[in-house]
Structure formats: structure tokens, C-alpha cells
Length: 137
Image (cartoon, rainbow, N blue to C red; front, side, top):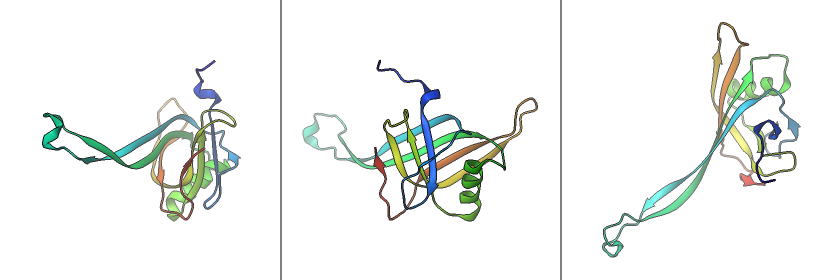
């Protein structure tokens, strides 16, 4: 069984500087964005083709949370945003699975107030400058 369902994916948070261990259950619609920068290495020997080498990796995650001030994970994300502090987070494809583990900075915390829905927060986190190097686990 190679296919995995998003509802079985796991997200964790914790104190920056160590791997996140507390599960986030107040989370939905997670998008893990992994990209690499590019260096143009085009030469005349490329037979008319642009040539590229991959450079630095980038990691950002976008997700939705219910706006719940009593939820510990929501409070940690909100506090990291307003206090300009880092938060350890880990996003796995299943319990014990693989994914990105790093310290993050919260760059977006948008409150959505749809008339017939719960108030939610759209959150974006990006790999932060930290003593703990990001890793794919």
C-alpha cells in the first residue's frame, strides 16, 4: 500500500532547539512546500539549452487551524508569531513516517471569519535561522 491519506499525516510542535514531540490535532489542509534555488550554468557547449544546477533548499508549510485560544498548539503558533520567536515543528506523512523537522518562524497568521464556519487561522511557517539544522526524517 503505497498511497497515504492526508488525515493520517501527523504534525508536532515544541520548543525551538529540539525536535517537536507534542502532536497538533487542531490542524487541517497542510501543504509542505519544498523548493531549491537555481544557479544558471549555461554554456556555449549546451547546444542551445539553458543549463541549471540546484542550490539551496527552501522549506515552508501552509496550514489551517481552528482559532481556539484554549488549544495549546494554536497558542504556541500565535505566541511565536506575535513574540517573534521560533517554534520547533515536525510534519510527517504518518505516525513514525517521514517529513521535515526544523525550527520555524511564523510568517503569516491570517484570521478567516466565514459567516457559516468556525473562525480559522491560515498559517505559514518557514525554516528559520537556528542552531538546529533542518532535517528530513
